[in-house]
View 1 (cartoon, rainbow, N blue to C red):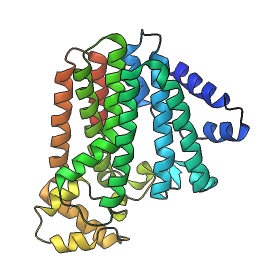
View 2 (view 1 turned 135 degrees about the vertical axis):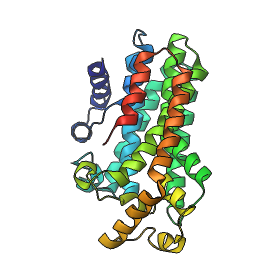
View 3 (view 1 turned 45 degrees about the horizontal axis):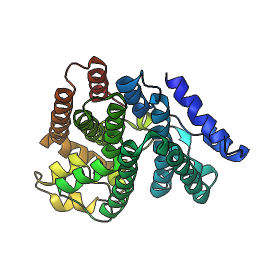
View 4 (view 1 turned 90 degrees about the vertical axis):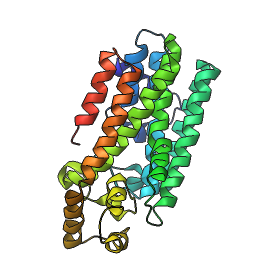
Length: 294
């Protein structure tokens, strides 16, 4: 079924009748299509399931194009980013084109779904802005971090699962909770892996988030427990050398902040499982996500 999603997305791009845009689209790094998978698992028998999945993935692709510009990222899943090869202006405009095309197709799904998804994209953009602003200084407020990752990551996944539920008449609120908590847990695990994984696996230096000014949950927990708060703050948004990197990792291990962060992700995962109890396929998605190491 995901092949149909890929075909639909590309057909929309082809309809623009611009070979340059098509070539840029064809060279975008493709992820696991988590959002499309969720739609197909929840609403696989509905005639609009492929269309909804394609819209969501087109929106996600657009957001990543903009995200790479914001982060000055040269790689996306091991491939050169569009802003690295074609420049930031092109990356932004291609992202805008994908957003606009997705919205054009979205309106055909009715006002309930259109409003859900459009609101999620507004929150996603707000989350990106919060992420940029929060990186300017050390943030030790867990509630601010959770609000930011909800808007930036979880809101679109929440809208995805709720919209799929609407298509087939399932409990919208239950599936929205599943999507929200899946998105929150996903981002927490992603932030953990930035610390616990290796450069070859990540495709970027370990502790890269902290170098970029992103104070994720393990660092927030560490700040509230360690004795040398000033040293941790001084390392924020700096080019961390090997000695300082080793000190931060040692502190994280000593205070168990990876385990504390994972505990919250697991709690969110358990709540999501309860919301869709009995849906084996969605349970498997959560289990796989919680166990990932990349």
